[in-house]
Length: 203
Image (tube, rainbow, N blue to C red; front, side, top):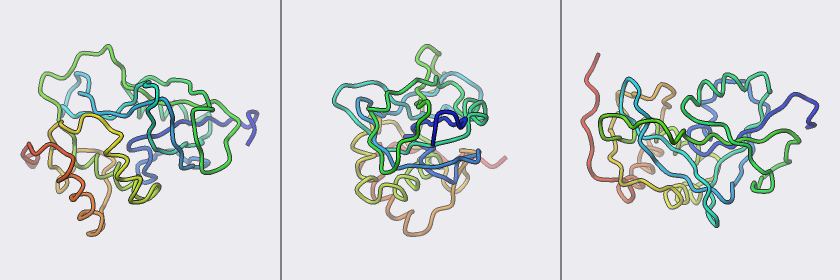
């Protein structure tokens, strides 16, 4: 893949790891690991709706996190930018990426949450419907060991979980198999704060 073919690539470390959440006709999805960055939960900036926590990454020497490198058409980048609203697109040094596949010859980015926006008025919570999509993607791409690393390499799991699996708030929610439910719930019991919020009311 050459730089003259109108391609871009971006590292996904959350919901982007799950193909079912993608909304552009991507060219490739390559299992990857990013060095020098640490993943964590942070309060979503003040905006209408649910006060969800979001995943982001920040530079941290010696750290690393699994994910995927998504190769996409450059013409789709505005749509990805719109999806990643309140994130800034940061250029990556390709040398920071370890890939299970051929490296594309094109610009490489990562989306990091904006830091200078005010927090939501209410305390943040992790949407279980969002986390399910993330965990399904990591399990599919990186297996059981990668799923365990996701929890070990992500800060902020003392944030309460909003149990909306049955009535999802996350717009790109996914369906889980019974096996996935049981597996993810075992990890949640070990790693996620025990304070649960009530599911959202109907309507």
